[in-house]
Image (cartoon, rainbow, N blue to C red; front, side):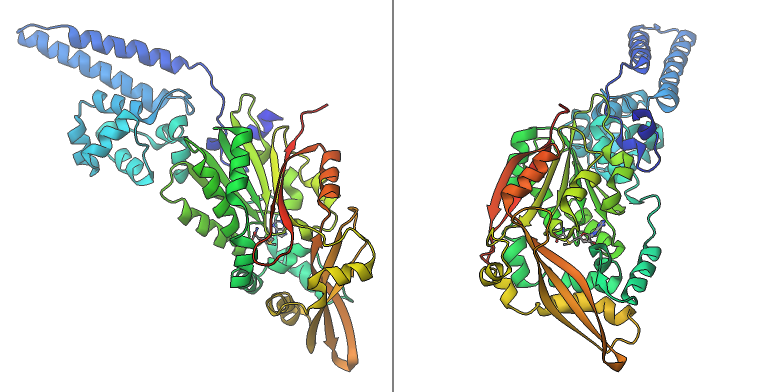
Length: 487
Ligand SMILES: C[S@@+](CC[C@H](N)C(=O)[O-])C[C@H]1O[C@@H](n2cnc3c(N)ncnc32)[C@H](O)[C@@H]1O
């Protein structure tokens, strides 16, 4: 399985070299350098012919070294740092640091820092150095060095469409459903087209949404807990359904602050192309100058997560850790939460973390009258922003629609004890006084202990429960779980 996924072309192979292996290349390098040193120490005297022969030998030896780099450098030599490579290539080219600075148009102080290893090259510096012909730095060599591998990510492919993913087909299915007799929409559809994405972005950037959710999310506490559990390791952060990416970027910024030497791969996986491009741009802008964070966009379906093998690939001696995150109440829209946790995360490895936020129930009673009297949302109309967003596709794709009106419906038939749901019901008026109803979206309220028990049953051990409320006093929390070792 490892070999298969390591060779998978779904995701960049440049990202998968996490094992340390002894390198024959290193040994050859060592002996050739020793030889060059010894030759340099030999004095040819004042004889012109001997001096010429000596110079030719030194030059030949340098060429052999350069050939060794260019053609035989292993793509993943785990022990070399960029500074060493640069110094070596520079000295073999017979250049001073000043000359390299001059030819590459980089500052002398940057060249010195790069060689000392006190600074890592960004994309521009790397490309400038590769453009100095005498250095014979080949992008495929420098971009696969572990110490700079994260920085080289800027040169690696960073956008994928998962195999089998077909958003045109999804839109066609959505249209067919809207023109059928009614029913419940799978929530994936309501973010798919550009106008839906735009309406969603407007909705989640209103002052009330920002105050009640985005600004109140306990990013710092989550990041601290992750650091306590993992310490300083490379992290693969997989954001499932990042929307416009703002909450996820905020969290990754906090996680990054806890890393001494950040080595983060930040994957954004969303079914909606317009939302994904917005999230990707936001993340790429946020971490543009940050050499320790590589951002990658994946257009895909989180229900198909186990198919995306490279996201689950763990090299035998990996020092990286993986964290799945679902933010913004994404869980509260999943049709059957236990099935989702069981199936979507079937590829998770022991030790992986999974975190999500969830709204808590106002009462553990299953009595609708009691729930209605306790949950304030149920006594109000469906907010206007939600009506605009969720009514949009009906107006765009449903034939003959004359009017759309919204109301809440209470759903008490949930698989988790103590949980209930608020369904956003669209009543569609058609010619001839005909009507049909769609459940366009849902929010759930959970009894946290039953959610935790469900996760325990699926081998996810709770390691953090961080409550937060925000400006609205709706109780909610972020739950963090770690995949248990096999029993
Ligand atoms: C409730 S929004 C949350 C957005 C964001 N995490 C936030 O905190 O604002 C749900 C997100 O999940 C995405 N989504 C819904 N169903 C999906 C699926 N099956 N696969 C991948 N992404 C999906 C939507 O496109 C949207 O970006």
